[in-house]
Amino acid sequence: MSKCPKLAAALLISGLALPVQAETLGLGRPALPEEIAAWDLDVRPDGLGLPEGSGDVWTGDEVFSERCASCHGDFAEGRGNWPKLAGGQGTLDHKDPLKTVGSYWPYLSTVWDYVHRSMPFGDAQSLTADEVYAITAYILYSNDIVGDNFTLSKETFSDVVLPNTEGFIVDDRAETEYTAFSGEPCMTDCKDTVEITMRAAVLDVTPDTEEASSEPVVEAAAEAPAETPAEAPAAEAPATPEPAAASMPDPALVADGEKVFRKCKACHEVGAGAKNRTGPELNGIVGRTVAAVDGFRYSKPMDEMGASGTIWSMDELHAFLANPKKHLKGTKMSFPGLKKDADIDAVIAYLQANGG
Image (cartoon, rainbow, N blue to C red; front, side, top):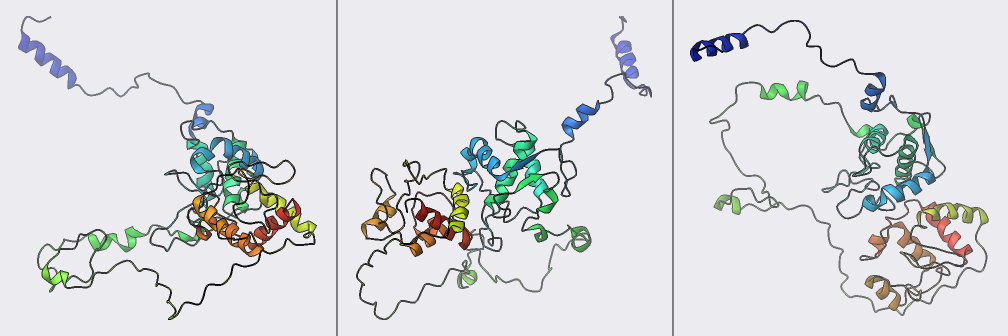
């Protein structure tokens, strides 16, 4: 070591200032094909990047129940703050749209890729390719995009077009907007007059001056209340219960209903030996008083509906199965409803044919 500290420091600094040598440092090696494949997981909208494999809707139903339902619900309806994966069609123009695979997502590849990379929560990339195909098929089925006999595979992938595929546009802001903000910004006297034309009632950010407070507050449009008749008609006597249909329903319709009922089997049983589960057993439901199964604890609104003498008529069942929560506010039934009238008719026929 030099006896002169200043000289040692100068030598050190001069050494650090030397130009970097051009040769390699001899670290690392080229990545192996299997190492590249482990990272190269992306799937493109045209299906490029998909692995071999396949999965049908009902296999997906089983895998989804086991690996996904604890967060997303048995029917992809969501639980708590976990996201809904089904429903929301026709809500994108609403104030609070429901964005799901069926209502918003543009490409099936995004669904497959996300499930493959990130799910299940806390155990990402533990699913096999066949399980991912099956889960994706079940999500499509839950959104009424495919039928219950559909099998998703590398070969059938491009056959599926999501409803909102045409709802996205190419980002053209560089051509249409950036130029408007690229010049010298105006900082003073940019407008001749400034006036408040609307008030942010929800965010409460509009200055509350005397002039502004005299302006009408613009609230979100509310549904117009139904007109109240001048004089309400006299209450009608309770309807007489409809008798159960004497004849058996069409066997073909019953067979269709058996397939649709698979959506219900997670909570309900019907037929010989049926027992209460999350929902009550459904033997004899057609023509029966609402909330009449002994030993089952119904929600308060359902009990009140039964106490009023309401019967599970064909019309009542049809309305309830189409949208349970809308038809009976407060019901414990989490199923979002059957969207197709033909499916509702079929499942009612199946219930008639099996003790109903």
